[in-house]
Image 1 (cartoon, rainbow, N blue to C red):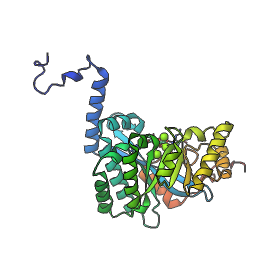
Image 2: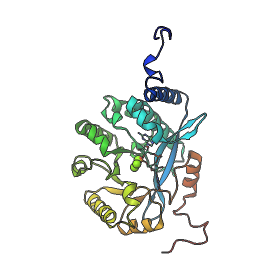
Image 3: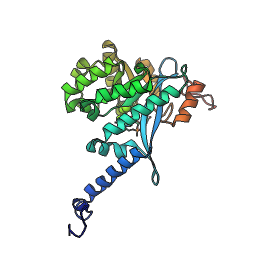
Image 4: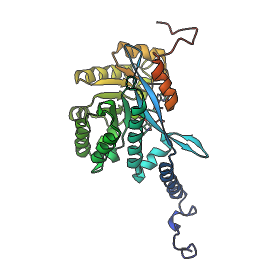
Length: 290
Ligand code: C2E
Ligand code: MG
Ligand code: MG
Ligand code: MG
């Protein structure tokens, strides 16, 4: 049978043998094609200062504009990109294009942007020299960049991730701990990594006003972070009640659908230019009760 298929056969991927392997093989091929053919897009989600309600930074989030399927969310393809190692090239593409984009924004309008970085990148030797080159090429001030890593990424190889993290910080790039509270949380990570921000996961934030334990945990994380000179970002803020409670708890920045979903570059530019303070109640007749 293998002979019938000729020299370039992929017989181990035949659907009848293993449909899942076949599917991921095809998807990986598509991802490579997507990277080569400029099918990835970057959306930006504003991060709002608790005290001023102003947009002070934003998170870059990748999307795949598939010619047939439309916009594909990262949850659908990042896991496979991680598995295949393609995430390193995709990640570098994101960094390069965020830097280029930031150089295009008017100098007085540009705000810091955070980028999600895979542990695969942090573990790859020479990735730091690639990174240095990308940033230098675009001429962007590295102080305007922030890299988000997760505790699960740290768990891959704490020693190496820690070394890379230090080199990233030496370049002037800020570092944050993403999805805090969901992984194998260890307070040691906070001691060994010089994080600028801790991002509290949405799973805590969505229950703070309903669940006493989530409220106490959020409060404690904020106090601990501040004691360690780190700022705190709340992820997935969706209601004004959550906003009010996070303000009471002295959280620093908020991110979530209450303010804005991740938006494309032109919409984000509009947000930057108008300098909208969030939540934008100007359009609604009934502002949230204070
Ligand atoms: P993340 O880094 O934790 O990003 C936050 C996710 O929560 C985003 O999903 C965002 O759209 C969503 N979100 C924000 N506010 C709310 C809210 O109020 N309610 C709800 N329900 N969701 C909210 P998204 O864009 O689908 O990204 C999912 C994950 O994919 C990210 O989680 C990140 O881990 C990964 N990812 C995204 N872009 C990249 C990238 O460029 N590189 C890598 N390595 N991973 C990425
Ligand atoms: Mg993130
Ligand atoms: Mg997160
Ligand atoms: Mg997440």
